[in-house]
Image (cartoon, rainbow, N blue to C red; front, side, top):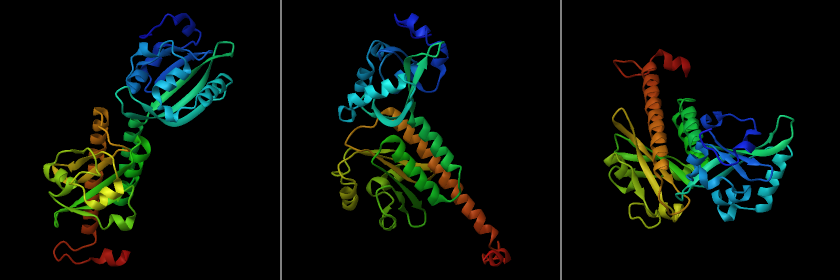
Length: 313
């Protein structure tokens, strides 16, 4: 194995190979007393801590390191470990605290690990980074339909559910009116959404679209670029917005709103950029489909509805 500790002989009892290093998820191995024997490189990538930080820690110390104290119930954590030793697996979605201070949404699995005789002599903690899972979810959503509203609603919900944000909103650019029309918001009702439009070049969304660059808003409640209604609705929290660009054209803006006032990590920014690119592609494809559908039911010379339109009506 790439990472070794003085307990390597005990680790060999698990009959695990160096293939653990190649797994896409974070792996942490514990002995029957709940002491860390091994962590793979992906586990350190997800948490931001070096390998040496974990080796020798107890199960409780690891969880305490990665979870906010407000989320921590030691009796529950120890009970989960004991269940794993007794052959009862555990799974949950939690938010880990990265060493640099930002939140990492993860799915946790804890399994018993048995020796060659079938006796449980430890446990394996697996953490799946939901940032990666979210990208796959967004790509799947984008490719699942050509109905734009459905795509945008499902994407915004997936963003909030998978990466622990307070809210997300997507604006579509109306080229004729030079307006950004709010299409989806995870905190506004549909009646509220239709009444929100931002002129190009005004407010945070309008400036993002005009400049074609992301914009960070430190505190939505105090920023003059945010309208009064949004300030009251969103409250004291940070936000970052990205232009939705496909084939050189600005198609809209997407906003990611944090739970609190904070900075966004470089990892989060890369994730947001990937999501923005996928949403832009979805809007482009939906617009193209709409144009082709319109062409199929109208006469190319007169612009009037053709025979197919009346048949389908």
